[in-house]
Length: 177
Length: 177
DNA sequence: ATTTGGTTTAACCATGCGGTTAATATAATA
DNA sequence: TATTATATTAACCGCATGGTTAAACCAAAT
Image (cartoon, rainbow over all chains, first blue to last red; front, side, top):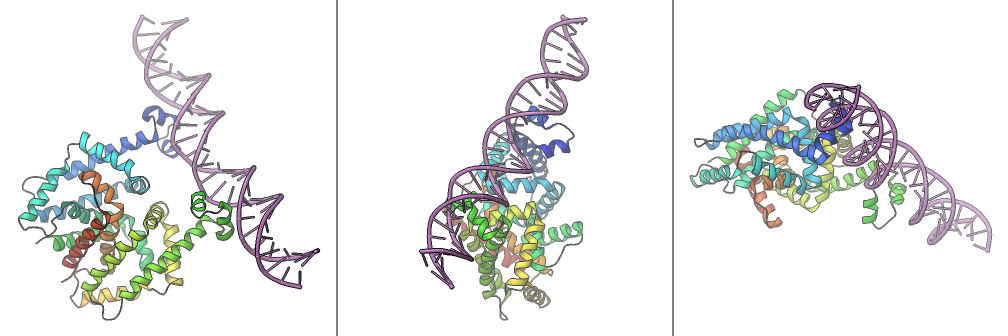
């Protein structure tokens, strides 16, 4: 909290005055950032959406979004690992009650794609996990893979572009029929 | 450290007596667990290894290994996110100096596969990242995807089996030619 | 000018935690 | 048995940090 206050050039007590607790500040920030994210995602989901367009756009949006908010992933993953109930209830609350994005239509869409023989994965949960996994790991795992391989990434922009290309390629070839 | 000592039914000071610092204890544990892991991986890597066998075995070993060591991922991801230099230098040291597993032969093998037209991904770094990403996210992301989708995983064993199947399917269809 | 309500701050409190220490118990050795 | 090296412990230290408080500041309303 002190560091946040320093960053905002205000006194630490002001954070508690306006946000009452660290947890509440956290949720407020999450809400803002989720609104932004699901807004972007919502914009590509429509009736005419094809699976291969979805698999092309989603990783791009996801990876670019996280790259734009480098601290978000750090904070969320920390919470996800240490007390998942906390962050998941906060997320569920935010998503289901306050934001227009509803996941169920997307899940129904994925099921329909599978029934139409367009995608190979029948379970929408695993379908989405595959996409998110490939996108998110670009950030968490980069230093680990660098350490194991001994290969250092030179340009970030270059890395993300190649990463997006690789992810989209794997997803389209791997999940489309 | 206090919790670890409690778990081992010893006094906290003993941990410092035998391991001198938290960091050193951490590295000792990492070393043990990495030896185990890379031992398992090393066993499947040989001259006759085919890419599709590799893509089938690696995720299975990886996912089962992490499932067997639930705290490992938590600790490593925490470090990976908060001070990557720390964990990566520790990892590099452990892998390159103390363990028989060498990543370069594997990377060469992947390059050869690509030259032979067996796999579509030309960069071994991204090739490996795709595999690790899909495997690892089964653990970190599970609660998140559950929260967003509203679908709760019932049986763990069931979840892992389906997860492995989905990952192997995506990888084999997505990266093989 | 004085009251009032929101705003801002420095100083403080409590707790958690990595790490230390000095003293004691125990086993090995001469 | 006396000595020495190794194990083991309770108590303590210092620092970071989430959170609180009481007082001061300041603008607008009376």
